[in-house]
Length: 144
Image 1 (cartoon, helix red, strand yellow):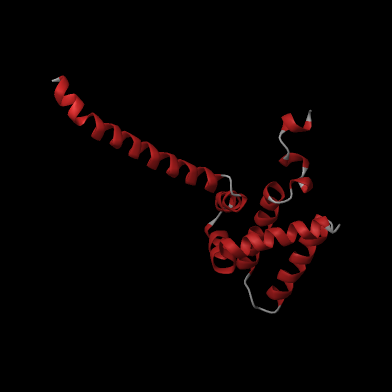
Image 2 (tube, one colour):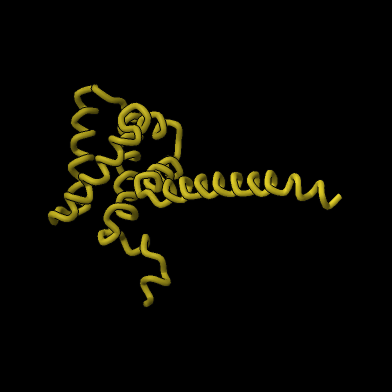
């Protein structure tokens, strides 16, 4: 019995090392994806989109790359000193103009506004935390 064990021991050891090496590489890949801010942003966006109209508007008008670009542009505007309310008002005015010109419906206008709002709110958490609203900052962090 012991002789048989010594015969298969090298093969068993090689199998264990191979499985361990493959598992570690997969774990590193998963960790790197989880630590990527773009992936976190996309995950949160998909979580916060509330109704099907917003999901359709996101899919048709944005997608991952364009939403990330919009979020970063929003943060740049905030860094340059533009007020959040001014950004939202400009967006609202633009959508109202498109509605008045019969380019979009009221339902689409609300959905598009919801998507932009979600992108901007999430951007404050991921890309520009210095511009977060008080409610976005965890209580433990605020009371330090």
